[in-house]
Length: 257
Image 1 (spheres, rainbow, N blue to C red):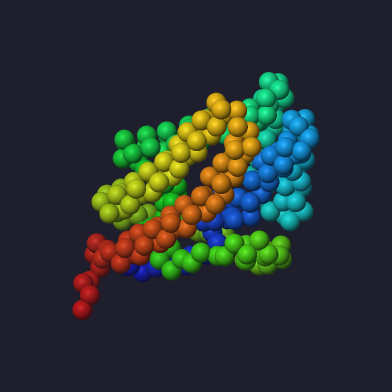
Image 2: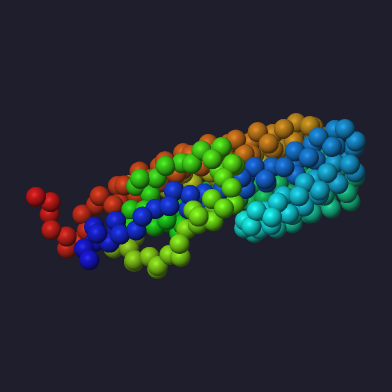
């Protein structure tokens, strides 16, 4: 099999990358405990807010069980909510519900930007793990709509399940040896790292000012909406990189007539 045929030998399931990341529904589900805490804390105080957040996290977990979806994200969400409510309960400060998120955002932002120093941009590492560009898998990628992801029935999801993959063919040229790909993944890593640090800085300022309502609002505004924009941009850029890689002439392939 020639290198070009090998690249185009696999078709890309347009839902694969989003499903690996939890999908649109998973991102919405992750926001529900925070929404519940903000609303309940504003109405009934810290204790009510804590119980509302826990209840929302448990409901999300049970819904994913009923829908027979992956519970990995729900379990991590339960753990994060549990740690957040324990911190807030022990200190008696509603603002401490957001401490874990501030620390997590700062740490992820630093790690992402730090990966640029060693020329291993983490967005590239993740993208190439989920869908290797030397296979040309994302060259015809289309983003599914939020509505279609939220309204899809479990039976439809089962029908659309990605069949078991055969092992990926080894790359003829590593993506880090392609200056265009390395540069693009570098800028995408800057984008994601910068957004994580932006969340951390904004929330830390509001935390120090003890602005609980604004903390919750910023958590939501800088959460799902901004992440959705980042994903759209990232998948668009990665799709172009895959097209660029799949069009490269492979070593040993005859030149085009």
